[in-house]
Length: 599
Image 1 (cartoon, rainbow, N blue to C red):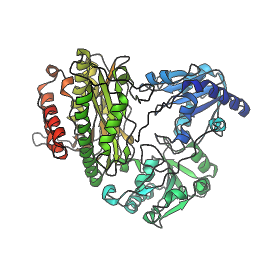
Image 2: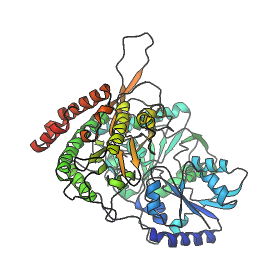
Image 3: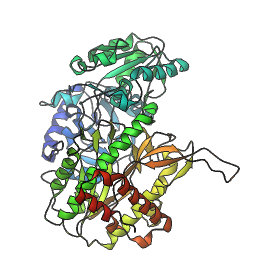
Image 4: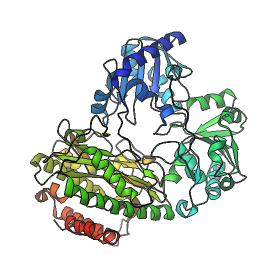
């Protein structure tokens, strides 16, 4: 199995590790140390070697940070993780509601004066600049230092050394030579001599390679310098590159990672950096050598987000393959949900259904399979300690996905355990469904961003005095990371949506101690058909659905749906049957026929 069920968090370790860190802080002559969930590449996901936040605090969420002082240790998490962090950390750590409480304000309250240290490879230039600005005039000094957690982590895993491999052109849709030329032309047009690329998925997309350095994400760790002549200097361990050297060719020069800093100091002209993802250590190396810096964003990020025809075609096929596997699972679930199965049983069965395709490379994240109160933990991950037996009358949040060579999937369905489900759960489910349908049907003028659309997915819940504490949708890669930027359906996203961008559409609702609900499809942005019935026509965009798996009709209060919403749901279910039935065995096809009957 790809997923294991060991409990990665033990609060009992926290006090001793925090005390050891404070001894290291005293030895270094500092009053505090920042521990982010980040590595030197600044991707969202980290290898075990870099999971310092989890090792120190016990908190295993995918976002957050700790600020350890001599008498306080705050663990800063957003709304997705506030229940989880309370369950995972010892009393020596204090959960802090971030971003409502900013780090600078917390520091002013708990460290009126002193020195706060940080590892400059683990913090971006933008993060440190923002913090310095917020602390201006205060008696708090920020100082870069060697990583103090690494000094006390005696059994720290080795850095990952997974071998890189080629992503075939039939799925990439564009050669890496053409990508390099296209991006290099943009650099030259802007007057930039080079761009430094740190994000693993950007590097892999640019060079049409994939890797195995991060669980669930097919990326290889490394750094790259893209030059305005379209050549690349790649800094990656030689052992990783043995299977891709011929593919990369002579215009991609390969170096050991330790050669990066000297190569940076040897650059000339204006070097482009992405302030929100470049480690401060790289900025310091360039500025220390007197090299001009232009902050202009990762040159790969937007082109990577706008999928080409081959990538969209591959992703659509991956979703149909995955949808058939999920339907096989759901047929099994309906037959067994009330027979004493557990959350681990569900997770294993779903993974096996995907494995039966004989094309699964990995799951795209650890499956979220939470029943009853576990479903209210937004990013719940079942382990042997938390494993819950499904109970009649409860509901289960099942959020999962697969990595295939032609695409990455991510789907959530909320499932009833048995035929009798309470009215509060059905009402909340129907409100969530109404928001999901509203987003699916949207047509909007070109130029709008995720923040402009996000409220449509929340409006039915808002009208009932309800909401949820996560974004409406994230970007998704093409056989890359299941969370991809810069596109998002979020109130803080100002990135205009463009054709080819793949996003999730996943409203939810969570009642602590009782139940959770989420419904998620992946969608791709496309041009909307032109209209002929007016004079002031605008270029319009819309979403096209990629995910085809039935939404459980037993959870719906049909009288709460409008006629248009019922029509959408019935048409969607008809498409599910039409597209998936030829891929199913006889028993699953019979189940699908029943699951897609009109409401």
